[in-house]
Amino acid sequence: MAEIYPVIWEGDRVLLIDQTQLPATLTTVSIATSATMAEAIKTMIVRGAPAIGVAAAYGMYLGAREIAAPQRTVFLAELEAIAHTLRSTRPTAVNLFWAIDRQLTTAHQTPGDPDAIRAALLTEAQAIQADDLQRCQAMGDHGCTILPPSPEKLTILTHCNAGGLATAGYGTAVGVIRSAWTAGRLGRVFADETRPRLQGAKLTAWECVQAGIPVTVITDNMAAHCMQRGMIDLVVVGADRIAANGDAANKIGTYGLAVIAQAHQVPFYVAAPFSTIDFKIATGAEIPIEERDPQEIYQVGETRLCPEGAEFYNPAFDVTPAALIAGIITEKGVFPPDQLPQEQT
Image 1 (tube, helix red, strand yellow):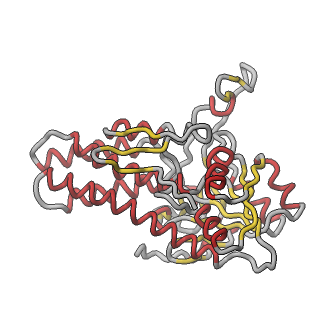
Image 2: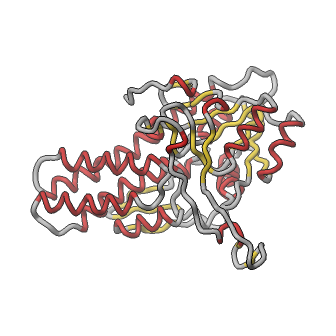
Image 3: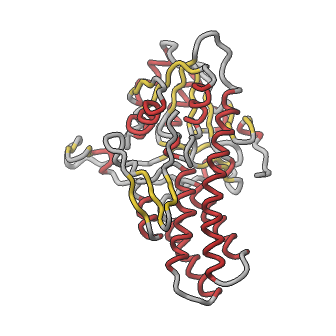
């Protein structure tokens, strides 16, 4: 099965798979500064909460490399400014903030001069990347335990992209799909196209094709029809932030999908690493929702779809209430949304 690594450390720079070019072209972008990393995150060259976290961790090291101040206190102050710039790129994905805070902690706890701190930041970025890959593989294994018993192979519906491209290389929701496929339990994936950025049609479908997994792309408004016809056994999606009570923010359209799944008694699961759970936020009402450029709605390429004079609203995420979620699949097991363990070990 093909492995996909969206963030690669190569010598003295980061290579990112340019997800804006998929599925037409598989190409990479070379990132050598914290500013270009911030821009790559903001413009969605790299996307998906865990992958954003890995990219930001390397962005912190690249920024540290640019700081000329030899004094430790000045160096740390300038590193905080770099952290602020990286934090401002995507407000909903909590892994971004988690990785940046982890790097700041590393910087402050590493004794010695700026050179020692820089070396520690690179080591920590690589550790964050390796750790995410292991966690995703564990998530996939735990996800197999919730597959409905059936003599037939299952059909799983997913929304947006929560695959190798969105993580360090295996996937959260798509990691569960990959593990189900390897175990011989999966017959087909249905991928919502995921308007307006079409991550499902462009990225999830591409990953499934690369892995040899049968995939059918549907428009977002076809999910209810497919469930009504008994075509979907299970829904598994990722998340960009999960509140302490189990409410989960994911790509816009996820909430509606959960409502539809409940109406048709189709189990709805969220797959995410523990770093995606924000225990500082009590409920999903506190999760900031990113709003993006309305051009994503009214224009595709050079073609304008909507009339001049119309207004647009383009939230990138919505929040699915915990009551609609059958379970949250993590690297430590599968938990009811209201029973998430607090200890992040």
